Amino acid sequence: MSKEISILQNEAVELLKELIATPSFSKEEDQTAGILCRFLGNKDIVHTRVGNNVFALNKHFDEKKSTILLNSHHDTVKPNPQYSKDPYYPSIEEGKLFGLGSNDAGGCLVSLIAVFLLFYNKQDLKYNLILAATAEEEISGSGGIEYTLPYLPKIDFAIVGEPTQMQMAVAERGLMVLDCIAHGKAGHAARNEGENAIYKAMKDIEWFSTYQFNRVSELLGASKMSVTVIETENKAHNVVPALCKFVVDTRINELYSFEEVIDIIKANVQCEVMPRSTRLRSTSIALDHPLVKAGLNLGSAYYGSPTTSDKALMPFPALKMGPGDSARSHTANEYIYIDEIKKGIELYIQLLNQIV
Image 1: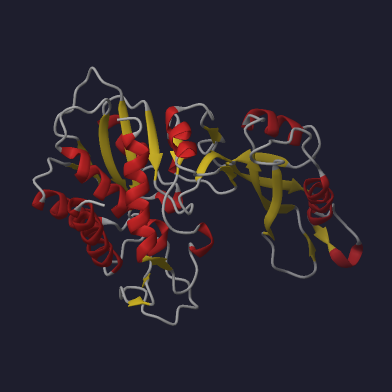
Image 2: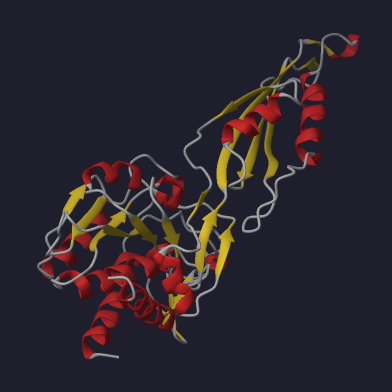
């Protein structure tokens, strides 16, 4: 390993400490965006900030070449109430760096920044590189990667930094949240009046809980639906409810479009069904894509991810891959191993060296 890479690894850890110490909840990432701008500025990296998103192009950007996006996010969820450590104090214990956002996805972000710095000044790259540190990933907000993409040159494919233990998430389930309303008729419970909307909802909920989609993906398994919220508007015990609302979380594999799923549901239930959004669709990258082939050559395995990321909002092939472990995300006393960051940087470099 070169001295240059060793310096970049140490700088990445120090940058992550500073990010951890600065709260950056989704839509409140102003200060961490400022930290990232200052860091890049100190390295004489020409960069741009749009909202709370920061991006930079490699120094010798050539519009005639294809372009790779290196993307991760700098927003976090709010700290799990079971934290016993200060979520904003970046402590290191037994090789672990603790702190909110250390694993999801600070380690990935600073690793990609380190890699971008290494390649920034090179003149003979086969591809252009763009670094984008974006906001609002944790809420799939419109002010993050989706807001940033129109400011960027044409992108051919991307590496999305999320904690995958440096394995390759080549596919993701799509996420569609459904608001459902069962309609009844109000009446007095004592006189057996009305039509109980709860009972109508229960019949539909039973269908949601038992229906099985018949197209099963090799990477993502079967599509799934889960009823997660239920409520009525009236609070009186003696009134038969006229409305019963419930929410369905659907996780859709790449073998179904959202429109197909909605049609299947509407053909089988009586309630109103209204999708909140159809933005977060299932995505996949071909197994013979240069990025995936490079990862396979380096010994990384591929899999289908049950979770959704900014990959879902990218209209081009993207590989989700990064240091850390998804199982630690959003947990109390979140951490990432220092060695995970250092090895992640090395593997990202090896990955890009095979294609750039």
